[in-house]
Image 1 (spheres, helix red, strand yellow):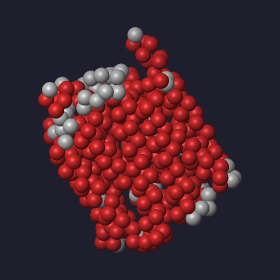
Image 2 (image 1 turned 45 degrees about the horizontal axis):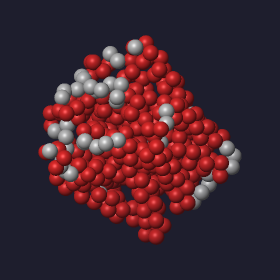
Image 3 (image 1 turned 30 degrees about the horizontal axis):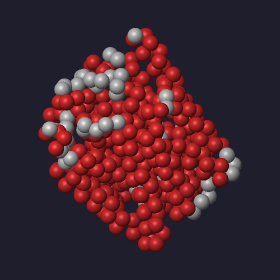
Length: 397
């Protein structure tokens, strides 16, 4: 009776806004990559460190969360995530000007908001998982779709702002985006939050390390994060420099359509996913991802390059939440440690993928097509890992 009296929709809305905040921190700065390159004289090789630092910071947060969250408490940690996200976005507007090398200020700001992003990434899914909702797979898929819709909102609003107000005024917009996580502090302070597994202690890291399925899940998440973020983080610069589109059109046509495609698949999967074979769907997604990377990197026509970018959004949509849905039920006592390690692995892929694309691009004379071609390796490995899962489970049985 006590649980039914609680309004868990408030919890769900707070987590939705948390994922929207994560979309802001992940997608706003990449829209400024070429501006940093031109105005601050930051080379593309250094700019490639921005997403790498972002996701590596999240990775460190994920590792710390394995032990710290259960001791500190979910509510305190999730509120901290909102405060860090807001602070980092505000610092991004001011810190670069305070250093002789603006890149130092950018990186410090990225680290601060990445702490917030990492916390909501680890805590959002288990908080929703612990709520007594029916059809949790649908709720979880819809939750992850809000990251995509948040990405679309960030790209559309930011692009319109740059067009009508001017990209030179980007600092105002950076501070404006900080209002959303600040508002969400009050949501998380008031909503009901339950502990995963009914408060029972989950498996420790040593126990997880002994499970072959856990290691497959780790590689899957690395490849899922790299497949998604290699394209997402460079989509704006790719559309502008490699495809020859203008800044405004490039942002709409590249990262915006990518996010729309990804969000659409996640929302539809949340509604109809129970009718599909998730493993087969992930294999199909991996194959489509390989095709999309090849199309974007090898096509001589801008239209086909853009099509590759959009198809990539469709293909990577289910990789991240799909891995969670495949592995969580098979490791039922994984607890906070499992969610944190899966998030850490996704962040590792999110750091390695864009960094690989940026550095390969620089090696080939700032040719982003060459960088994206190298990114094809991630969905290929993902397919191989999915095919291993039945073999592992068959041996176990």
